[in-house]
Image 1 (cartoon, helix red, strand yellow):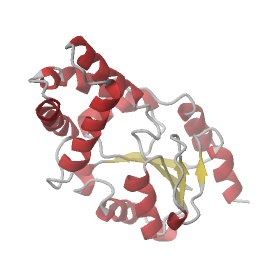
Image 2 (tube, rainbow, N blue to C red; image 1 turned 30 degrees about the vertical axis):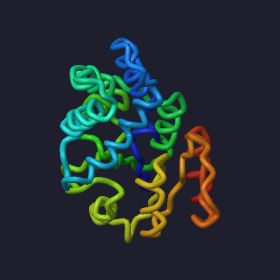
Image 3 (spheres, rainbow, N blue to C red; image 1 turned 60 degrees about the horizontal axis):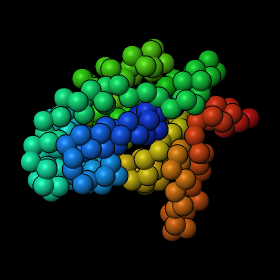
Length: 223
């Protein structure tokens, strides 16, 4: 079976980014908390990512911190620490359950693929943590857009011949991954790490809290 994964949040633990934003804020004696800085960061990431069709993620980060300083009244604090933030992305580590699950899935004969809004520069650092587990990584440079743009998903489907191949998508992102999967009738599994409660209007959503039992879930599909 072909199994596609989201990267940030699903496989890589994003908590260090919030921690780093908090450290920068604290070191500069700002009143902004780590949570407030992360909320501001996420807000501009979501908006700026869709101003243009695609922009390399590290360039997007440069725009994000510029608007963070504007909104938070922090002068150039976050802009001056752009390299530190980019390095924090490069240093991200997989959640503890990830590598054992990926190895088990691959040993079972599944083909593993990544679908990420990241960039080639950052992904090269992430792949050092994953080794040769993934057959291919789909990035905006290849698809010409970001998730949740349906073009990202249809590009993957056409490239991997999903019309004639069994496949499953595993992702933590709800807006970026779960909703497009529902719309396009992709089989999917929500890796609900935040334990969100989705409204009943979203329908019945297959989910797991992490990847620990994902290999068993996938194996049972073939029975």
